[in-house]
Length: 125
Image (cartoon, rainbow, N blue to C red):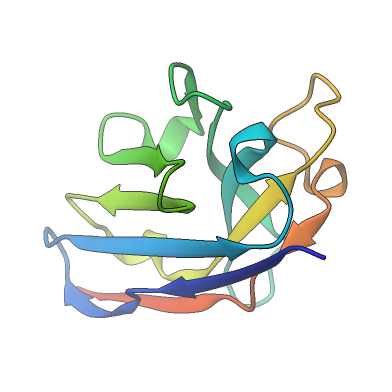
């Protein structure tokens, strides 16, 4: 059983930065595609970023590209999301997710097998 625990959320002013971290236990972390998703009130959960097994390839949703950076440390079993130039529209609960059997899709919620409990990010204007 894989468990994911996020940390690092909080309240920040527009233009500020936050770094989210996700710690994994169980399973073979280095074999997982890891992703970050977010869900704002009244909206569906949406893809933010994903990273492949070795960390050599990353993917980003259009609204965050150039502002967010995903990275992983397979030795520590962690995946981070550095968020810069934050905007009020980035306000959401952010979730870490693991895809254990890569299907070829990295941005679909249903392709991920394990999820963290989420961490709140609030950006004030």
